[in-house]
Length: 91
Image (tube, rainbow, N blue to C red; front, side, top):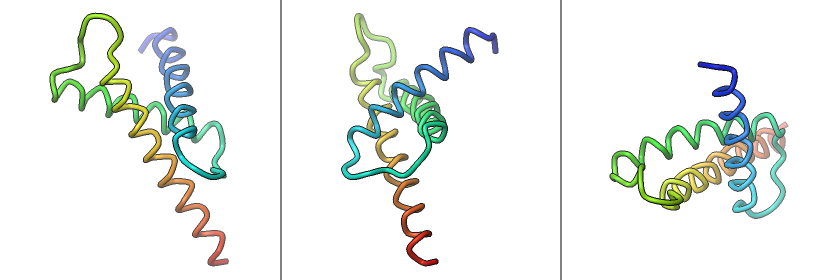
């Protein structure tokens, strides 16, 4: 992977992760680095799901692909922040 590809993956992951955090209600106690990682993974999985459905390449903005990515990021943020909160309450 080229340096430009790595930088663009980080930027896209940050945007997708932050949009996912905005969808989750309440306070999420996860770091920005973890948000970026969740966003990168959600972007990859969302792109794969969009290709399965057949909407990966459309003219203009790929809104359905973006929706898949943001919803997956929200699920990932909710799962990670929820599991972190439960772990603290047990201690």
